[in-house]
Image 1 (spheres, rainbow, N blue to C red):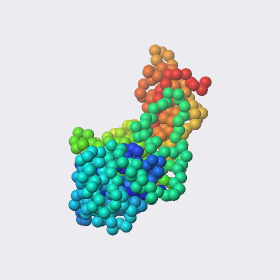
Image 2: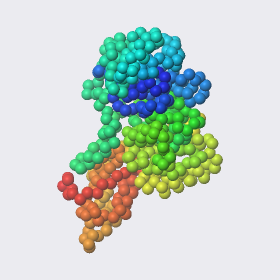
Image 3: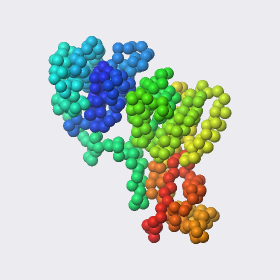
Amino acid sequence: MLKLAIVGRPNVGKSTLFNKMAGKHLAIVDDTPGVTRDWREAEGDLFGQLMTIIDTAGLEESFDDSIQGRMRKQTEAALDMSDVILFVIDGREGVTPADEHFAAFLRRQKKPIILVVNKCESKKSQSGLGESYSLGFGEPVPMSAAHSLGFDDLFEALSPFFPEEEEEDEGESVNKNNFDNLDDIEGLEDYIFTQEEDDPEKPIKIAIVGRPNVGKSTLLNAIVDEQRVMTGPEAGITRDAIAVDWEYDGRKFKLVDTAGLRRRARVTDHIEKMSTEDSFRAIRLAQIVILVLDGNVALEKQDLQIAEHVISEGRALVIAVNKWDCVKGRSEVLDDIKHKLSTSMSQTKDVQFATISAKNGKNIDKLFYKALQTYEIWNKRVSTGGLNRWLASMESRNPAPLVSGRHNRVKYITQIKTRPPTFAMWVSKPKELPDSYRRYIINGLRRDFGIPSVPLRLLIRASKNPYS
């Protein structure tokens, strides 16, 4: 499959073009220069022709270890992976000295280069289109990515580089994914078991989340064992949620690095608001969420709020206590973490956690093992026969409280969903069933069927046993 890298100086519309070709809003788009800092890739579809497209940070002239210098290194890494380069300039501004500088840089890459003159939706950009010939890349492709103009010309320019035979899997389409529908986990009215099968061919999605500057990007780099995303001492380096494909022990994974999550009251910058929304979407779409903490200030109020949000979304949560090599008084810190987890997270008991040093690569395997353990529990399926024998035993030991002197019979229970494990229980008078009895059933399910550390949902129903 053709790999296409989209490059250019900041704020020429690279991410807008990337989103259009990907068929979904993946990269944050804003008029502020330098929003994109890491390269990201996705499958794109141009008039039925599939390709891998790579969005890059704006080409910067910095060669030092500043944020701009690290952005340049990320872009250079993306160029090394590509087959063809789309060099994007702004038609409204014309050819700038920065464009000329980077044109010279791109010529040294010795790869096919297609010049795209973006923002050509009006006559104001005609002079810029004429100036673009001076860059020496032949006939430019006039486009307006924001207005979906010029994609036919881009397809024609790319045609010589497409593979001769490009097979497409039957029944699949790059643009069929609709993020707006994936966070809908309703549809339980018919009480039909709706288990998602664990397809070993599909990657397990893992989102890495946490407060700013706790080491999320460093952890992702440690897992894949390469400098895949930008890191540094500055808080807030990551803005887009960056997805990275990875394989471990024969199983495919999609790791997603996210922007740091601060308290909502402190989020005032509009770019940070978009980054926060991107992080919450990554949580909704994930199967496993690794919450990264700074071991020196572990489990602050914001950490617990993020954890509660992950649990409310029904995701499998694992906690990574990072920077453990710098922590003093480790036994006291561990006791504090265990106490806060047991007292502050009432929805989920025994959440798995591991102490790690992402910077030194310490205990990464242990963290990943616990993540996969939690994933298996999250997919757990309990037979209906065993559940109802268990329910009869639970009711005989502790019947539900009487209602107006009459028994409130607990009639039937079945599991209707996994991911997370979700059960429906039929009761004579569900509105009169106290929360304490509901907790009695939930705690029993966790204890007797081995369902710790993941969200567990119990729905109380009044309808008759549908299987009687």
